[in-house]
Image (cartoon, rainbow, N blue to C red; front, side, top):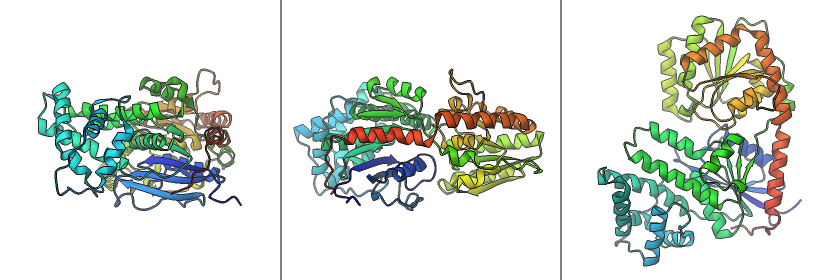
Length: 484
């Protein structure tokens, strides 16, 4: 067997996901690592805190040789005994980082600054040089706001950035970030320092997702929303310009990447894929049950909008009492939100609703008559694709690739695999549930269309073949890394 010393090493960089969060991007990462046993993988994971993200949710493959985790809410930096004074070169580098969008940032100087002041980076943010830059930016764009509030927001923004940049870079032959944001940033810096290639795969468009969150957030007010949104757009542009290849899951997102500053020649579309043979072989749902079972394979978190799901199901059940809803997915990622959902359910008094927790999808999906997704943001949801492969009609909100998956593209003559409904539209979602509950023949027709569409366009083997080619191409010219 080939030794680890001669095997190529790929560093997968992820934020808020693997191996601490189940489903979605994490499942995709697990599948990728398992399918390339001839390569060694390192996970460089950015997590919020040790309490919420301290336990692995996956059995780690044998070729996953290391996991590095940066916890953003850890505070290892202590004030120094004296005021931190930056050299002229360091001041210039800090100014480029804060005031320049992309091209003028001197990354080596920034890294030198961080390494020199590594144990006292809080002093950099509290120091005179940072204060002067804050005043300069404030006078340019934010002078109508309260300066102390503005300064607090700016420091809150750059502390986690410096924290991730202070982490040691794992030795690898290829860096592969699975988003922009902080993951794309440290991937860009790793590629810059080591001279190794950088790939980026975006499942959703990170900057758009953060923008939606910030607009709705209560902790950011007024003009400071613009400040935070601009910050995340800057991180995306940095990553897009540094990356050797930027992958989207579908054409609409590739166009968005270009719109956000990614050079078109770097972009590529690689759709997700599922194991069609496994899911298509599952038995059809039993037809003699007293209830129509609606299945939702989804994490119980705000971005999946479980509250709208519960409200819509309650409304639908009033028109079609023989409905039941089974929500399958982790309930421990956001305990407060889970409690709010359960409280809403109790207030509604809705019957025949259950939370099954984390499950093995293939063991339960055949029991669904139709499937429901009410997310406010998605990329190309694997749960929808697995349901389609199993021949189950879908209802999904108009987010990410759901329209393309369920309705096809202009060259696709297969017909609808389900219904696409507006985000947060309780009435329209309820009507869609009632419509498909009343029409079993239509559900079967949609299930057949979805199954065929997955077979033609979204098979796991095709997805893996394209990543194998990518890895082979970008690893071809790099000698094996020597590890740490």
